[in-house]
Image (cartoon, rainbow, N blue to C red; front, side, top):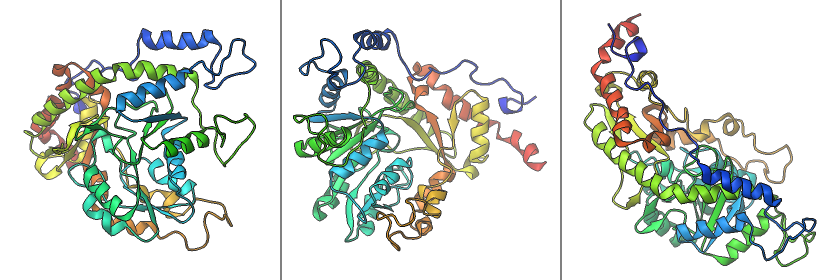
Length: 427
């Protein structure tokens, strides 16, 4: 009789891992406080009795808390992580026909934010061991039109910011950290998001801190913060009348409900970070013992890995089954996992067909964009990652240590029973 659950055997795990999002009475109290206050919007409502411009909003309170947690001078909340990228780039002066260097192994927003400003994303390959932007490839991607670099701390693992910043400083380039996965992660004594000129975070539903949606921009530069705040608030200035607009901006605010939830989420983040790191390090040890399985590296500059995703690489020849077979078997054993991105960003139809702006748009003069498929040859590690890695959800690492090790038990079991796949393959 088969031992693999995929073929009818008993699974390693039958009970669910911790649910996400994680919440308790703290979020409930915070939401009810906002509800009963009648102040649901994070500005001052003149029509609301008792409204005072001196009364701090929940959004302002969370901005202060988040900035203090990160060790940043300024934190500005906004509607989404995508909005945060767009606002920060515009505040940095990125505009039409500028180039912005981005990794191809990331969520679309890292590359779409430059496009929405009329700028051009230039894809630079990733490191095999970390899946982060490769500093060794960075200089070759810089041209006379390069204005900014967006390193992504993918899965919550700090990129090599020292090397990236050294290259950027020598050329006067703006560095915007995409820390959407990296709440609380740290490198060389500092929290991610505070190492570049600015950093962004996402609070979307899957993230390690969430209000369903939301984003934040952090920076130590007062002028940049003022610009970002103005863009988030429709081009307004805080000291001027409400219906005066000084620059083209957006309504990218979050609500008081979201901010109240985020304050509660922030309080439990340190404990969650410690749990994920403890379980992630133990899994790295266990999985390194299984032939054909290679966890991502944690370089020496990493103080804390946020482990938004636990990722490992599969060598099918050494392991005995393909990556996709392993994923199917793992899911059957009760381990939530996926293959992640099926292709790098530049293979998306949007890039292949250059569906960015309408015909005649001043943001897209003829010849501005290259053939994006050329990056397939320039980014072999991004191509390889899409074929070789497995993602496991961060909530798995919030389990007690003995339960988190079910991941290693399941992978070990699949390797031991790999012969069960042969009759299926023969058919």
